[in-house]
Image (cartoon, rainbow, N blue to C red; front, side):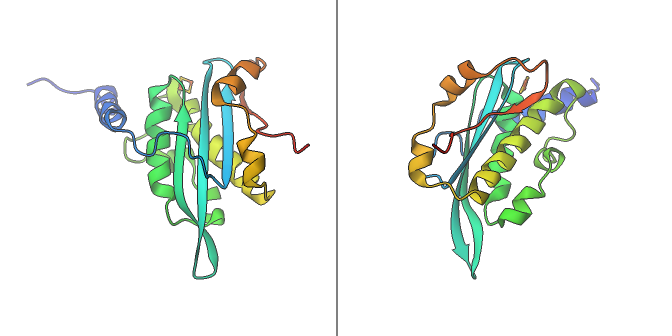
Length: 167
Ligand code: FES
């Protein structure tokens, strides 16, 4: 009988989660948007959040994402957007990349930055909410592709890309 390695199991679970990614796509009426890119692999994730009131508290009603290229980032972002529904801003800030990937297990070393990028995009979106940007500010943002082109190399560091200059 053929034994599956841990790596094979991870890949199988990863393929399952990217076969039908949830909440992928731009959210036109988002209340908050966060974007993070990595200059080394050239990938980028943008997270969109929509809020609602629940018992006097602001909670995440909807979350979606855009991503270029990296399937691991797509899988992690898909799982993250599913777990964000109903969370308060404070609860969402506490979610780590490890928690986002609990369904598929720990990411292999080469893929850890993919999960960190999704976590960074979420934190960036939550900071956007903290600074109370208006929907009009968000509509003026450059597209994901334009942001990617505007990125400067950062020698492997994950970089938070400003999404609007507040002018
Ligand atoms: Fe860079 Fe996945 S390979 S984000």
